[in-house]
Length: 198
Image (cartoon, rainbow, N blue to C red; front, side, top):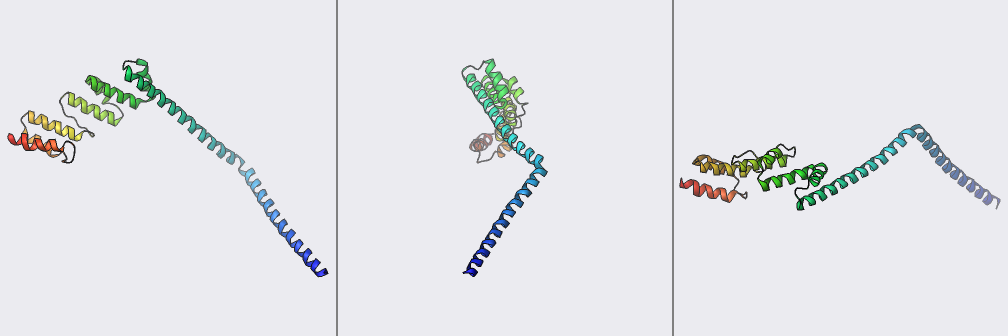
């Protein structure tokens, strides 16, 4: 009985030692963390503030961008009903310059306003610039280089060459138009009918 009691006490002591050893490790880790925190406190807080600021600034910028889009859309809708609304034009230009240029292009096309199109051809927006140059060329009946309307330019040059009686140049231009493009069948028809007649 005494021996059983001794074994039981020994087990209890071992258990307590294990518990104390575990508690010591927890305390030791807590002291290490505290030491680490004290040593890098400024860096930790700086990183935390930076993360909070990043999310705050991102949210603010998203909200501002959304507000600009709403204003620009309202101005654009106003211009659909009253194209001469100076305030709506100003808002659209300030809040969404790309949409303003597209609107200006559509308006210039409708009025065939070559001066406005020439102005738009100097745009930093390469799409607006390219289509404006091309349209000026069409209105002036002078082909111009165009990345977006390359085949249209070739077709226009061929058409003007036919009008001038230069069938070989027209044929050469039409050869560059891809047969699979929307202009392919028309170019093929011109090559085989109009040019062969001359």
